[in-house]
Structures are given as C-alpha cells and as structure tokens.
Length: 419
Image (cartoon, rainbow, N blue to C red; front, side, top):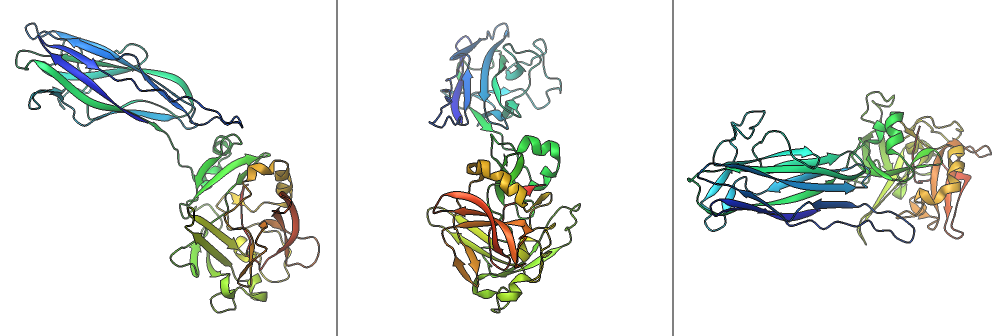
C-alpha cells in the first residue's frame, strides 16, 4: 500500500507549512463464507502541518505529524516513510534547498538548544506527541512495525527547522510516500521440528506458506484435526530442464539421519530410461518419479513417486510389508499413517484435495485419470505384499476415503505430515 504525500515548507518571512495528503483506509471486507480478508488501515492526523520560522531571530519551530496504522495480517507489517531527496527543495528554484541535519550529527541527536541553523530534522515516538532529540533524514525511515496483528498503532513524527537570512524566502517541499508492507516471514519445513514454532506457524485458521530447504520450493500447510498436513503435493525432484533422471539430496539438515543419502531417480514414463528401471519387478526397487509441467491457464506442476522413491529407498523388493519409517519428506516430516488419514476424513475439505492432474502412473502411462491417490507409510494387512494403504479421492462421488490397492511400483502423489 503506497500513497504519495507532500511536505511544503513556505519561507515568506519564513513561514513553513507542511501539507500532507491523507491515506484512504482499506476496509475489512467479508464474503458470504465469512472469510475475513487481509486488511490494513493507514491514516494521518492532519492535512496541514506548518512551521513558522523567523530568520531575524533564528527561531526554532517544530510540529507533529501523527500516523496510525492497523492490520490483521498474521505476521504484521512494516511502515516506511520514503523520499527521493533528503533536502527540502524550493518549488520555484530547485537550486535553493534546506539540507537535512549533517551526517556528523551526534549519535544522540540535537535538542532544540543545539539544533544547527539552516537545517531540518525529525524525531519520532510511539504515541501522540513526539519527544527526544532530532536526527538527519536518510531517504527511508522505518516509522513503525509489528510482528503480528495489531489494532491502530500511533507513531508521531516531529518535524523541525531553524534558519537565518541565508535561506531564500519561498515554499520548500519534500515529496515522500508512506509505504505499508505486510511482513512475510519465511519458515522452512525443517524448522517446524521445533514444537513451539510449529504450534504458532501451523494452525487451522491460517494456512501458511513454508519452504523446503532442499530445493526452496514453497508449500502450503495447515493443521487438520490436530495434525500439521501439507495441503500441496510434494514436488522434490521436479526438474523442468531435465525430467528424465536426476540425483537429489534428501536433506540439507545435518541432524537428519538421511543427511548423506542421495537418490538417483528414474522416470516413470516409458518404464524408465532403458525401458526397464520402472517396469514390473524393477519398479519395486528402483526409485522412479515423473514430473509434469503445464503453462495452460497458469503453471501446474505434478510429481508422481513410486513407493521406492516415496520411502527414500527404504521399502524395496516385491515382498515387503514393513512400515516406511524413512521417506522422501523433509526432515521432521513423514508419510502419514492410516490412523492419521482416517483422522483427516472428518475435515477433509481442508485438505485441498483437488490437484492439477489426477491419476497414477503405471508402466509409463497415466491411468485412473479421474481419481487421486496419496501413499501412506503402511502396508496392506492383506495380500499381496506389494499393496500399500492409501488416501483416495473419488471424483464420481466426491468423497475422500482410505483403502488399499496402492501398488508400490505405481506412481502416486505424496503429502507429508509433521511428526
């Protein structure tokens, strides 16, 4: 949010008005689902602040400009005052200026009695009246900030000057803008292994964007029935320039037991590079993925993993019913168990179950193109041992359910949960 304002200094017997155009407030709006949208309000106390200065007596004058701001942004805001020029410029003759206080200004600033002649400066305070000493203006001033939602916070900027006859009469102006910027804090998924941080970042009310430190891709997370879920599909290994084969580090976190583990990933399409790695029994041992990218109606990315890839190479071979205690998920995250999937079902609308491309990859072909499936960490309790429990979205009846038949050599989607 940015609005341009003007400070006008008028020197006619050196009277200096400062004119400020108020910012319009942004109103909170609500849709029919009572979804409160992000909102920020910004207001200025007056339309006109003027300083009256007498060059004969070198009189000092100061006036206050009060700025109020509020926001419901979960991570707060920063409010800056920006100007193109630190000097006040005579509007009739741009060669005539009043400079801001010199760079040699003491670290403690100037009080009224020590304020040097033919300069201007500012002071600020949280509250309705400015106090303290004056400082030089340096093109950008952090007016105020918050780390979370706040009702109106008031900051007062005191503007002051002292001049003598060396300054030409006239009107002097400083063009500046107030820039209110919502604060966006970048969290990595790996950081959320700290329970205290996780409880404040991963909440039901505010889906949060976090990043995977392994490849800097962004994901949305939220808490559903007490569990922190990814509500985007995992895309580790996506490589638009070379989708056929890639070697990836599973983690950048030194405390992760998988810190030195790498996977060579083959492409599920065409059964693998040599028509063998991802086909039949080999598909139960070789980590295989397929990445899909489409620019139609915006970008869409899909990454399918067979179970050898989803389990970070820990569950391989055709006869294996072990639980996947390792996964391709970020450090501190895992494949969901059947229990966690069942808990999800009562609030499955929060899961963001629609994806860019439904279906599974089997033997190089996208199959079951209307339904969507996600691997769990658990094997089926019934034969054959190649099956995994999975989470299913059925488009025909628009329902989310859990079931088996997630064959491990088939490419399916992965979503991780926080351990």
